[in-house]
Amino acid sequence: MRSLPSVEKLLQELDPKDFHPVPRPVVADLVRREVAALRETVRTTSQPLAEGEALAAVTHAVLQLRSSRLQPVINATGVLIHTNLGRSPVGARAADALRAIATSYNNLELDLPTGQRGRRAGYLEQLLATLTEAPAAVAVNNCASALVLILKSLLSGEKNEMIVSRGELVEIGGGFRIPEIMEASGAVLVEVGATNKTRIEDYERAIGERTAAILKVHRSNFWLGGFTGEPTTEELAELADGSGIPLVEDLGSGAVMQTDALAPIEHEPTPMEVLGKGVGLVCFSGDKLLGGPQSGIIAGRAELVAAVKQEPFFRAVRCDKLILTVLQETVSEYLAARGEGADGGKRQDLPDIPVVRALATTVGELRERARAIVDRLAQTAPGIEVEVIDTVARTGGGTMPRSEIPSVGLVLKHPKYAKAERVAEQLRQGSPPVVGYVEEDALRLDLRTVFPQQDDALVEAIRLSEN
Ligand SMILES: *Cc1c(COP(=O)(O)O)cnc(C)c1O
Image (cartoon, rainbow, N blue to C red; front, side):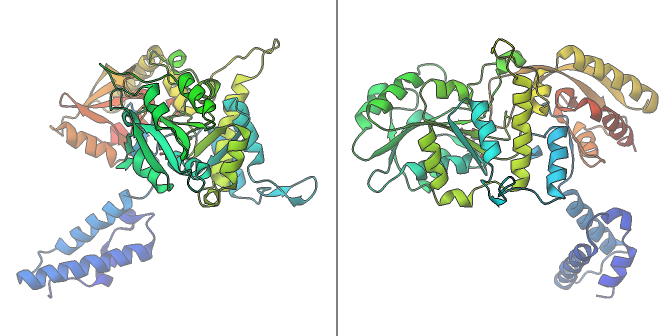
């Protein structure tokens, strides 16, 4: 046991550089736990520790903990909405607004003209309604909670059945499945059709006294091909209307721009389009293709949205002021870029939304940046082999699984690290961390997801990774 240093001694020997900015009490706690574990090892093996072994173990544990701290990362994966990298980054104006609201008091629930209690998020709801071209809209914590909330608001006593096609009972990621989310609302699922084919008659036969609504779930993260078929949204809307029940659609991905006009990829249905086809309520994520903060947006008929807001569960999943601010600014970006032409016709400029910008960047622009980076590395880090290559980027995050976006990247080879995985690891542990991917035994960095203003930091991170 004498080979085991004391907690105090280890704390003194730790290099403060290694644990900054982990708070000292957390480091002390971690060291205590490591020492306890080492003591247990010494006790059970009866082997003393080697010189410096305890300090090495403790340093490793501290570095491990420090790297798990939430921090900015350069996304060079080419996946625009990367679930592991926090989905959508938000624009500079949204971030500025966030800072202003976060560090001050605000009028969250105060009507400034009268000084009376005001409507929380009333302004945002108006913007969302205009954006989605719906009579009413509301935002909640995320799309999953939006779905549960919608279903809860539509259930009443015996009327608790939700009709859904077997071809739409999807897993949305992280092990969460639509049928389980639906059941969490207390709804009784009535599955119709087969995995590959559902007909309008299947829905028709399932409608009865207890039917609360028909749910359509957009297949946002997979596609179905071959011998398949389903009724159109218009047919379903007509059936729902005739039966006096609402049609609800969970769109998931939430693109509000024409994705096929932004990049050579597929068209992703927008909330405006599905509402125009007769859907009563639509929900979608705020941090997928919309490019905002984590949130779920519900839009549609006024009385249905009003019922959603009256549901007691609404309080449990409402957004806080910080999210409301970022969402408000994100939606404003779209609306400012949309404007109304002099003739009342709509134009749509490119809004300042990072994922939208990244999607719309041309291969030519990316190639130019790639060449500039290669030139700079040739001067500052001549030991690193780097080439420009064509790559394929994706929207990701469970959206548009078939869409391959032509992109440009760098292939990196280090003289020091034979394995591409080692180069990748080195860059992930840099400051800032850079996350790329390994293909054909080499590390690739896709520039579509790297913001132009990050190019300097990227060059520096690559240069430092040589050491
Ligand atoms: C992503 C997704 C969800 C969940 O959205 P969150 O905002 O992550 O809760 C729900 N439904 C569909 C169809 C999705 O694609």
